[in-house]
Length: 322
Image (cartoon, rainbow, N blue to C red; front, side):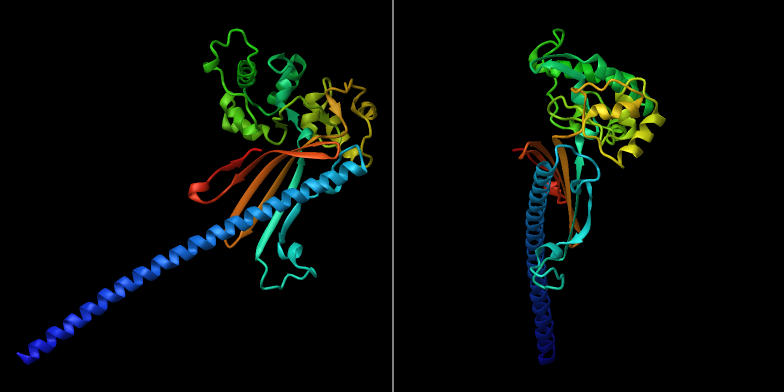
């Protein structure tokens, strides 16, 4: 009986130890998860802080560029992309990157002149509350769609839906059935452009909140070819190579290089107002992207919207629009 009692006591002790170990492991795991979540949130907040700083840096760069010159071209400082650079290179007082107190993160970014692309908002002209179709710009986009092998029916549908969204079509029906006016390029999918069409257009076209001229100093050859009637693609490619040696001061200077084509001041320019600022922070295996639309008017800069791509499940897409 004593032997059986000792065996039962040992078994009970082992069972108690197993239960305590299980609860201890579970408590440790919960604490570890809470610590990991807190660390991830801290990294996310600090990454946003870094991206906000990158946006401020880009705005200051564009402001200084406006002080220095009235034209915008791809040889200026704002057009140089920032490759993955340790944040410590910016934060350390003496420029060294071996300070253990500084974050081990990589920051990258670039500024893109959106007026170097064809503006789909130019498909409409006239009063904002009663616009009409711009046949000249529609012809330019038809050439672009044809060059990219995109269906012309999507372009026609886009123009119709844009007129409806801006209350410019008397056949649009009641207001609740009209589509919402887009605020950015990706939202053109609401108006009939397929995802693969948007992907094909993205390097050559954009959406801005108002009609804008095409910057002859930053536009790509395909955008130039589509925007200038009668221009050959080979001429546009040759022009892009020539302008790199001497940026244009006025649109009229491009006429001899573009077959003496007409270049109206309301459709072509050598300076820009709208820029896209892209930033990326890579930290501890996580990457956070942010895109911002900045409008520059003289020395004044305004951020029209910020679009953040957050990898966490509950923050997959966080948008801030001032």
